[in-house]
Image 1 (cartoon, rainbow, N blue to C red):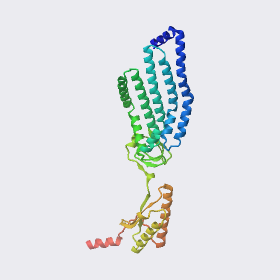
Image 2: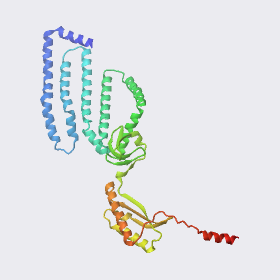
Image 3: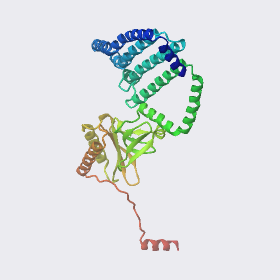
Image 4: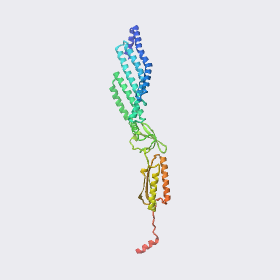
Length: 368
């Protein structure tokens, strides 16, 4: 750098008159590019934007917005490069200027692609639509892609200035390995979060049951998922744990089952049992909030102290409050049927037979 400044100083001190004349010509070369960057670029992009607004594709609109500022600085860079090349500088200075120019081109292109990879950019929107990626993953992939762009730009610039890129990359690999080992749990949670977001076993607001927790999903991040339990406690579970567990999503039930046994007294006549099962079945089939094709009402078991009638049906709603309301309506109607038919429900009972003292004495006399 010191040699470059020395050569530049010597150039301006050799012939002042000729130098001033060449500097003025260099300024004249630079001036049109400055005007192009200031006014022409603005007008050109406004015209292109109006034309692109008529098309259905968003690619041209996003490209214009992403490369508008880099193009403006590109005109300045080209003008400055041509102006400096015109000056009769030393070969070392010319080489230095060429390297700066090429590095600037790399930076401007990387700048445009960097803006194109933003959260609301064309690349992110296309990736979301074509790969069916969740909204939460778009910022993650956008930042990853931007990091790759910056890394590639730095590698190209370092290569332009003849730095040993291979050693730098090898160092990054070893450093990355050490970092990965140190942050193993954090990385496991992040990848677990990606799996959860992409596979979508649950969404915010779902009622979820797992070996770790049961509750309503409140928030999903890359590191953890927060649940609100039915006791109103907030439970945070690492994503790596959830990704390796069986998850039951009750909110995604298409219908909700009710199944129980109606225990009748052993004294119930057969015709009453048949009538009760028929009336309950007809009532369930006529109910507008119950799936008609999944109804089961049948006398199934002889138990120790009762006759079991299986009652099974599915409610169309899966919302717990509505489900309980329908279940209550059905239960009350069944009780009315039992009262109308004079049938009583059984309860656990035991018959005890007590032998009288006279019987005992007679038995003893017979033995003697």
